[in-house]
Image (cartoon, rainbow, N blue to C red):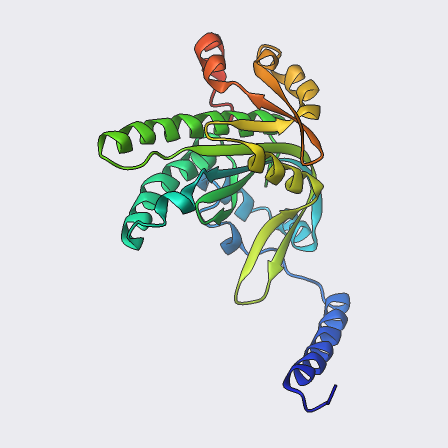
Length: 265
């Protein structure tokens, strides 16, 4: 290929830039992570605590591993349902729905919003600070989000709109927490196989479903023994043994556990 080809010139330019970047990475002492990465993504109380924890933020900038719960949620059939809707109406619908989901994740159950995914959300629990109940935080959030979706579905139906139905996938495991980006834009995110499995669980979850890998059942049984009977086998999905949580029956029959529903202060 000619050295005068524009794409070859770009290749050579980027090769030199990447080389300089590698040298810079190996020689520089990276500053602690930018708090702007967390604005609006965690509760104000946790944000203020984290803001004072410079040593921990420096560790995160370099990359650390932690056990977290990961949750993906998605509005089922959203693209098809909105294909004939005016863009302004779609935005209004999302502006009605997404803030309530964020409030449940951030304020009610002290999770962190990793990213918004159009009509979906990725959230993590146990970060920046572990609670010991990360898996329950995610499950309780998922139940509250399903309740919120059901409430909105009823209201939309009475108003002549199509219903909003969500599917949720959850997983728990060790992930890499790091920052990526440049000086103009940086984002904190999580990477690892547990994230991929959580995304698979969301993919198989139908409307109103909360799906998890079956190998989480022993941990759930340890944390909440009365919860485990409400999980039903979904078989092998995407190479993972999955279960579905009958959350509606759980909240109907196990009301004695409601006092602990908001598990993080």
